[in-house]
Length: 219
Picture (cartoon, rainbow, N blue to C red):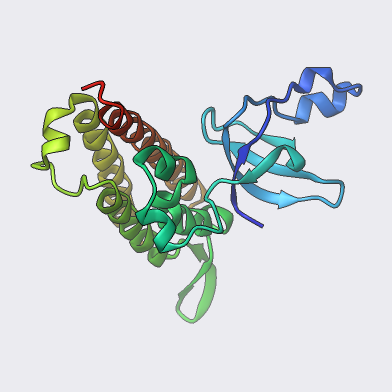
């Protein structure tokens, strides 16, 4: 199943009969994106909501895969920018590698003097995140800040700058923490990864809205 899922409907955890259940379950709105850690046979899943970074349990039948899974390259070529945004296809590579890290953030063994001392992060995940960010900017034709769309749309230019700053912050800490087995440092990398995903999703949404305004002849 998909690691990143999007809610089809809103859900209010306060309406649950058991007070204990409502305390560990999350309320969410329609179209919220969540990262999935565990799936239970009951049909519930443990997730983090990307909008609030709250972690808890949700009914998985309220969710679908965030990235459309049945889209071909020919389909993408014939899509409007609005349709492309809705499929989340430009995020596919970024979500893949971010999800790999978030699901198992300490996957590489660290040996000192031939003895296992702990586990650190896999740097290949962050190489993949960088590739995923680049793919997002290529797919939206925003890889260059000199692009006419970027130059004429201040809101797109602003979000592109925030997105790249989020990436730079993450990569900077990756270099600082290389080989670390310290849990607080790994947790901070997880937080920065979630922040980068928030910025990427916002960037894609704003790009889609601005392109849609052009397509509809509003500008």
